[in-house]
Image (tube, rainbow, N blue to C red; front, side, top):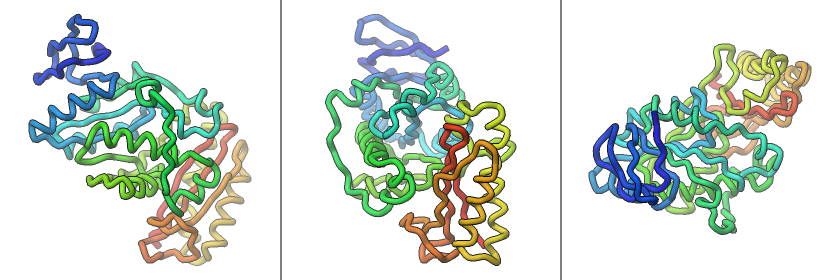
Length: 314
């Protein structure tokens, strides 16, 4: 069982069952994974790891963890001496307050999952800890942030850049891990890292899917049984479009995908774009100068917003 340390004054160097003194001057016993609530305790722990010559893998999350998240932890575990996962629902990246309020929060289950995945440190701060005052920074993220999600969710990517840059600075990782379900977000984070001179690896990891093909997402729990039954149509249509792309144009495939999705009960396509995989700019070629084109889709299933993507290796 995990016991939470409100603010570790000294990070123990031994493993499970270590004793460490907290800010209220009482002792707690902490299992192998240590839960940190403050920036100062996180920075102290990371500095201790660096002094020991250890590599650090960072996995930023907003919680409500599923196997897709855990695949990132396992990859980080395989690549690094130390794994840090953050669980923080970042308010600055939500342009829809209803979405922020309804975003699932499952801290106890998340902590159990993180420990099972081999995470060493779980950073679970309050909003006040991360933003003691408003973050007014504006990032020049360029064209990668101006299309698709950037166009549909004004301010979203600037909020992502705010929180991820904070986590990068606090942790100072050797590598940071992100899932390819959020394909455009990875390009945005790489742009932010370039702007801020972060010099470490940003590792993109494959989408993890349910057995019926639906991309794993924390939002899936909000689907009704009827909506959940049709949600795999998104991936199925994308997969079928690979065969069509062998003989059809980009414009024809885009239209076909949208028509198929929109003909499905409960579903409405917000956008489907076929883009250059690095610049995120729309393309009319299946093979771009930067590799095979990628199809990025956002679909409303009822009022739940689902995203997915596919690479056109044809």
